[in-house]
Amino acid sequence: MANMQPEASYDAELTRAGANLDGWWSRVAHLARRFPLGAAGGVIAIVFVLSAIFADVIAPYDPLQTSAASSLSPPGAEHMMGADMMGRDVYSRIIHGARISLAVGIASTLLGGLLGVLVGLMSGYLLGWFDLIMQRVMDIMQALPLLVMALVMAAALGPSLENTIIAISIPLVPNVARVIRSTTLSIRELPFVEAARAAGMSEMRIALLHVLPNTISPFIVLATAQLGAAILTEASLSFLGLGVPEPHPSWGRMLSESAAEYMRVAPWLVIFPGIAISLVVFGTNLLGDALRDALDPRQRNG
Amino acid sequence: MTTYVIKRFLLMILTLIGMSILIFVLLRLVPGNIVDILFDSAGMVDPAQKKEIEAELGLDRPIPVQYFAWIGGMLQGDLGYSYVSELPTIDELAPRLPITFKLAALALFFSILFGVPLGVISAVKQDTWLDYTLRVISLSGLSLPSFWLGLLILMAFVAWAGFIPIYTEPPETLWDELLLYSVPAAAVGFRSSALIMRLTRSSMLEIMRQDYIRTARSKGASENAINYHHALKNAVLPVVTIIGIEAAFLIGGLIVTETVFNIPGMARFLVEAIQWRDYPIVQNLVMIIALVTVLVNFAVDLLYAALDPRIRYSD
Image (cartoon, rainbow over all chains, first blue to last red; front, side, top):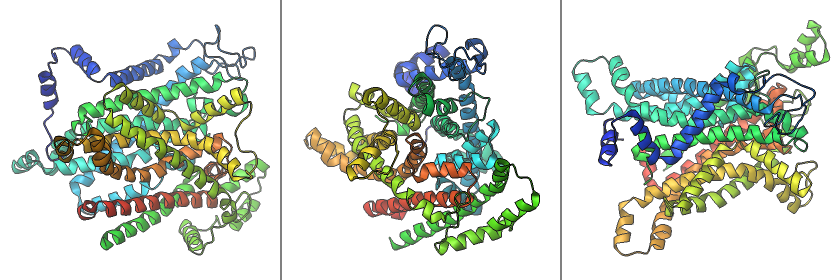
């Protein structure tokens, strides 16, 4: 941590490597060549984000519209990925499910991240009693696996979209808080912070204007990594019946509805929602790995 | 070392006390208690009767009183009674815990068996097609929800073997038991092995950049000697710490996997108890999970400090 380099060093490194940094696009193209797996992850993530945004346009059917005639109809011309017991189109439900999955995933990552940054920054900056107490609180929260904590929180808050987001975000706080705290601890010792203090800047301004901006890149790396975990947790909660309630089409609940009863007769009900979950998490994981390599060179392998 | 152990131990106790308060308060936030659920399902509305049942279950007492009653009982080995079955909590948990521990042990075994060697291979063959393939496999392992993997395995059994390997009755022989548990354990272990593989790989790469490896190489040591004699020994050390994280990871995976495979273990029981607002079961189960996680981490910390003296002094 002691040899932190200024932000500009990455550009310099790219230029040395012969990159053409003239335009935004050439920069993207260069990064994509340099991190092919990350670029693939980025493409996957973008596809899901777009289908979430334009779900109403893309989906051929209303995801809630039932039809006795097409009950359990297999994938074919009419229903690309088949239909469920109630005749609802699986493809349309998956497209609309992307909304729920991404909304819950992103919102809980951001909420948990925000709280984590706040706690971490204050802990690392104020130290003393506040830090001591916060550290112990974080210990307590980490004594339970993410899913167990989220399960208990979800049960305590009751089923709703907002409560699912809160239930997933709280267990994400300790990880972020720890990373931001240790980053803050190392940054506050750096000469430029000392210089700001010598120049008579108030502690509040130093914390917000000098320390906070320098925690952004570890935060981005961590948040991308946690996005996948948040999406998986939402799927698991919904699978267990404690997540996002009806009528929202949720991938996890699509699996729990179909799994036990129709596994033999309608395997498409199990296969497609699972692919959707795995693919979006896989995409964010690839992206997260590449971001870590790009933004946090100390962790780069090789 | 002694001060370190004592410090860690006290922190662990503090964490557990905090956990018990947290879980107790959270469960009292739940809108509606067991009595409400029973009344809804039975269609009873007589408030006097409701009060009576609440008093019988001790739910009318102030929350701090309820808390100390729970803790006091727990310290004397009395975990209270399940609201649903009215059996002592101990009797409910006793047959379920071994099932989950066996599953977890088997899953951990699978994940170390595959995770460590594959992580080493990936690091040694860094940036070759083999490394890329292994990395993509491990990342996809982390991306598959374990319940979906479980469902896929079940479907494959239905399609090709003509039967479903789910739990219907307690296994009789050790072989049956192993057979029955190894499928769900593999579903959970796949995810964990992916985690172990990634961490082994990065730890191995970290070590291979150290000066002493360069020294060994410049002295003419063979690549094999460097990889397996010099690097692996030191790379395995940080991997030990992962087992702590792994414990938490496994329990999360088991919750959904036990549900999929219909295994009567404690992880599935927790979900059922939460749905029923069966407080004594939920709070005791959560405490057991916290205790296991904290104890594993405590043991790992001590092991790590014993293996690497630098830890004791820096903390």
